[in-house]
Length: 352
Image (cartoon, rainbow, N blue to C red; front, side):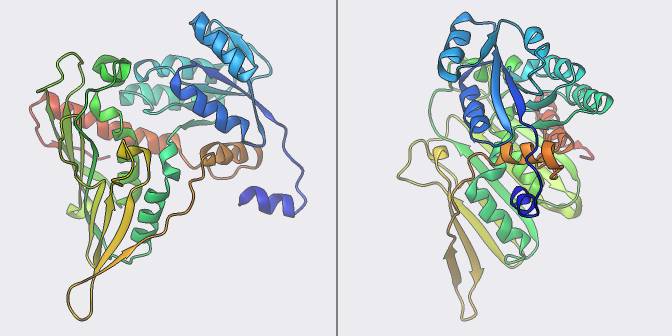
């Protein structure tokens, strides 16, 4: 919308920003597709230590490739760098890119520790560069419909939320399932779910507790199941569960307000369920007794909303949709939950 208004008022197009990717793993293709579809951004280079992935990037994208990040950072045609390395090694390439004068998109989760996050945020401030995190699920239509319902006050004051993702299947055979690299089960989908939760609830998180189970999949180091409980100012509660040993699914979202509820139900015609938006229902007490149920229509997903916002922020200072401070808060919650698990599920007092 910001771009449309500016063009209508006669604003000239801003210079195109060249983009380079550090890491050409599976998620990199999604970044490249969105970048190519976004006016104001131009996909120009990829750095990867793997010759095979460099050859693949050259063939698929038609861009310059480098065997190391340092070479890419010396490229004067690159103004924006996307860091797609594993979470445990986000901080060094992000800080290096910022020190080289590049704006940076960091893949989620931002990092495993708040200390690493603060290093990146401090570097962005010191070098006056834009830093953001790829929380692309902010544009999911089921989340947006739920958020609008809650913010409109239709279900009253939000005080309780359960969220779930999972099923019964072996975790992926990749670094995502190795806790020292990924951060653990909490950091996978939790990066999105806690981002949603923290956007929906007002006030600070005051207590965090978490429990993990290791019962079936002993060939990977991630927990088979985790549950995290948050308490906010005023006593509002939110729970997140991710499980690879859940033979029965819970709803994606179960949300209670003082005048109604929102239910997000997985679609039975899609496998795995996470590949499609949930069915969103609003339930409110009916005047004659019983419950009035409304199924919400979902808008099409804005597949490239993250990069459109970033391009417009770089060009015309549109407010950044995902700030590093917001992403820091998500990491702080996940790190606290990890600490709770390590201490046997103790309830930690926090101010997040």
